[in-house]
Length: 515
Image (tube, rainbow, N blue to C red; front, side, top):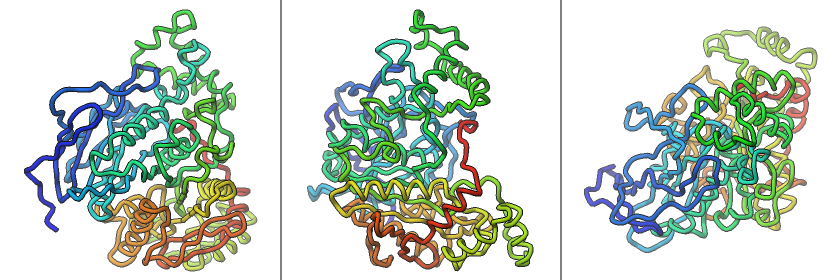
């Protein structure tokens, strides 16, 4: 079809007022839609109503970032720095243009970057919803929300009003889901068929929604993309309080003058966090900024199980073969030129005296891969994703747990096995926007396989489609994984021994210094 701009601009009426977007390629775009308002370190509230028609044609502000980079929206080939603000409560909607009155499934995407970074518009090939709406006939919604020191700083020692400051970032997401539940029908969506998904930290955000009772009526199922991390113990309540006290001491703020925290410039808050890192990390204190278990948020499922109110919701989890492996980069020309003995020497140097045992397990799990691909293997996401799938399958009353692994060697980066996020463009039908990671044969095959799996799961909770072999559910007794590669295969418990030994030989990632 011709992707043409429609001069007739769509107008919808929400609970709070009318919005005007624009139509391109048969898809209505409503961007920068406010879903909440909030004061610093306060729970989100409903947005204000307005008279007349409000324009919704450009992205809203993204959350302030701790690290020295700016979110970028790549739009039609242009790199556009986007505005950052504490006032970041905006969502974006891509909705197929129809006048048939049929309510369509809704896909809600929560961006990655842990709980401390990122935005909904940072990478358009990952997070732009036009193609999924256009090809899949579903509504795609993304949003920004509070992060880092504004979203997850535990100020509870400084007054009752700060009791849930450690969970404000995910409280924003609940507010966004509530807005979607109450308003999405006006855009053609079905509020009773909502799939929430997220990559990396976004996957953790998805799982956090399962653990908040207020959110239970606002979504139907979830997709977690490389979102369960095996990085050791979660931050404790005591560690989070110590982090906050160290920061407040640095800023000269006490319980008696805590009102000053409302006026501290964001960069000064970040500076206090950096100072606290230098003091606490050498002491072995976990200073990660993330949700903390309390009456509002009941803890992550891998630690605390799935809550009764959401245990029956469908769940699909996925990881990639490589994920984060910062230690390895083998140029493709070197990889091709190396002899078998040279490859074995490199593997032995990396893994030590038990390398041959590990290599045998890798060959058994991935017989069609170059042995050097073992150098990139991930266990830190794979193991806890399988454990989460197992927990869900044991408590759900339905046979509704699925897991996949994207193992395809990408054309770029020396034909490195799929890294953290490599599956996103394929899942969202955006692989043509990442051409260096695509190829005519297997790229299209994987886009069809994963893209249709996502669409079918979004529509009915079952990812099976004509481009994949039969995809059986993951259970404690039959631990099936759909392996997406040059040859797509359903495998049962195929890499468990490999992952177990790999974890013994390789320490987990430590994220604290990266924040």
